[in-house]
Image 1: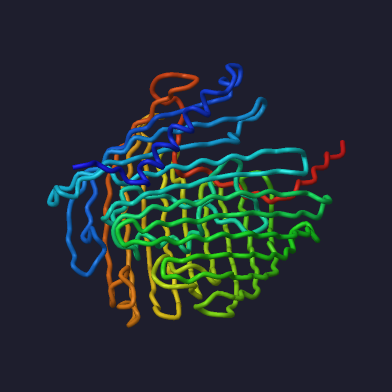
Image 2: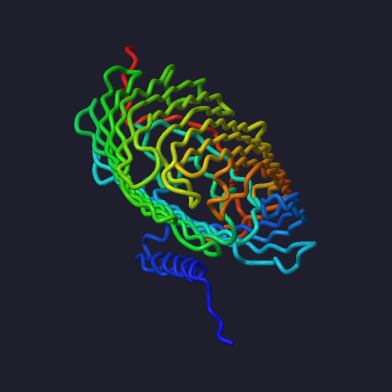
Length: 452
């Protein structure tokens, strides 16, 4: 019998090979600016609903996951402008050995380029493949959720909105997702800035069949009319081709203000509020035609902790379930660097999806602890709760079950880290996933020298 390989696995292999060949092609004098690290995670997970369905089935899962990370910083800079990471995982099930797999893989890369003091570009790609089960072997702490006037952190990966990260709760079987983001910012005047971006989100429902493709083009003007105010207005065009056959465009218009109080680059208490509101218009063949578009993010910073909370409301995809959805989400995250070696993070996200055919609600919450024994050895303990409630229209899709589905997941892990370049051996620097928060704005800070 002929053997065929999954297209998503081939894509991951090609991505890794491309990254390796591309890296090796650099001249030798640039290698000094590179750093790379290899880590190996082993963990034990318990889930009381491994398929996330009404037919609950529990199991213990042993996880092995190697991760290769590469960083690059231009001469004279200490913050990497390029980061790349690939992380496959192998799962061994205690009660369902037929589910043992190497199906889950994640690969991501981000690059930032400062063309001139006033012009900057960034590019990022995030790929993830899920197996047929719905487990959460990796507790991902969430960082700051900045307002629309703040560019992505240098060299970091742009991911889909946190409030819409629900694909693991509503899909059936194996799936693969890829999210590409390209953007830039131009400082036209000291107080006026323009930003623009293009994103492509692609989801393939490997077992269920079909795919979602979502293109988004956005532009925004920003006016720093006072020291603490960034007035902004934006337009976003979304072109979609969805699994259920729907296609069309969504136009979004909004205006808002990012407000900063007690802002300073030093680690002192900082509070920020970003708010915008506008109108979304759907010209596709199904779904809500007109909806309010509102974004609110409140951020509070301390020297060792950060707290986020907010609301998102817009026309979004329904992620394979139906057509365009009028989606409302409430979210909060909290990260705390408790001691030099101990950190904690938590999150809670509620989303309400309203489509022509189906109305469903999701809720996700989690708590995680990470302890650094040494610079090269750490342990983690996390808990996650997932909940979904689908209405009568759920029988119109093969990705949802009518009624309430929920799961509880506990994960205990141990991670070792090794430096590959420029040093070889056990990692020599701490690499906690929870970093000391710093709030940044897209405008240069005017500095004045104190009078003698």
